[in-house]
Length: 357
Ligand SMILES: Nc1ncnc2c1ncn2[C@@H]1O[C@H](COP(=O)(O)OP(=O)(O)OP(=O)(O)O)[C@@H](O)[C@H]1O
Ligand SMILES: [Mg+2]
Image (cartoon, rainbow, N blue to C red):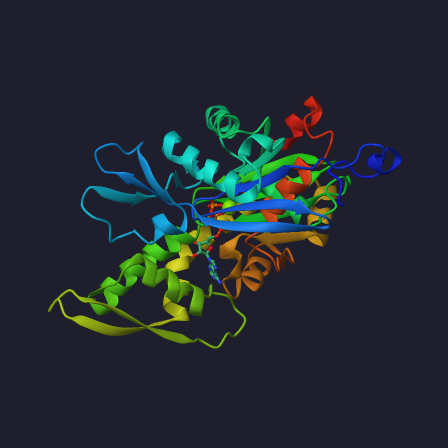
């Protein structure tokens, strides 16, 4: 299995990976649980949604798929909500229910039997946010909890050579937040987080459709269209494609069919792409020539939003970095966390420090 520490471990293989460990990517849209199983992982993807009582939002009635099915169609006294917004926990009680559910999914036994959990959170999370996630993990039944920057665990999950001095970079484009993380010698050298992601693209699509067609569409329809025809502007010719969506005419209130094409999605994504490019430029400004050379050779883009067509080309046009788009964008963060969780020395102080900035 990939080691968090590089070669040293091979000299010391008396320490075998721990069993009963889990890696969790606590995401705004999806929470992914990875459980090491031999050389592979058992993976569980849970929508980060909980259904709660309207009068008492800490009273959780359903979690995951069951709660997601209630979104927009719940009885009056129940609401389906997301415990995280832009990568940040909004409600501790709701996040705890989500995490307990995730741990249960990932463990065949009771949660008490899980030795160690490593949880990925945005790299710019405050000490308070970090502590909140650690406490939730402990309350949810884990003996030890380590919180790790999503970017670092994305790098580990992607198999990047994080222990080398030359440096690698991970760009994690999620639903609510996006991380740019430069890693060398096993730790985070530089980081930028923007609180923007695929959710913002969806919202902008809804707005653009209103403006252009005078039709209101649901946020889920917007996301579906984005996934089907999603593209970002770039100089390389890309054939535009289109998909049909049904919305509500703002003039007549009747259902109306409209066509969303990849150009509309690219326009909707543009503000988020510009924020990303600006953040990348800030990182480049700070990097030493040695690290610039390292990330030129090894930058990977992960997270669901990395799948927008043209992103690789656009990043190269703007900042001159040839990036690789992950072929496993939605689960690498959880896998990286699981690799760290199974690592016997993962709780040593030096590693705890490296796990976040
Ligand atoms: N094929 C696709 N093309 C474009 N976007 C996609 C595609 N598939 C998923 N997405 C988008 O990716 C986002 C979800 O990605 P991911 O699961 O990495 O986010 P997350 O980890 O839950 O969020 P965060 O990291 O911000 O907390 C959503 O906005 C979703 O619409
Ligand atoms: Mg994420």
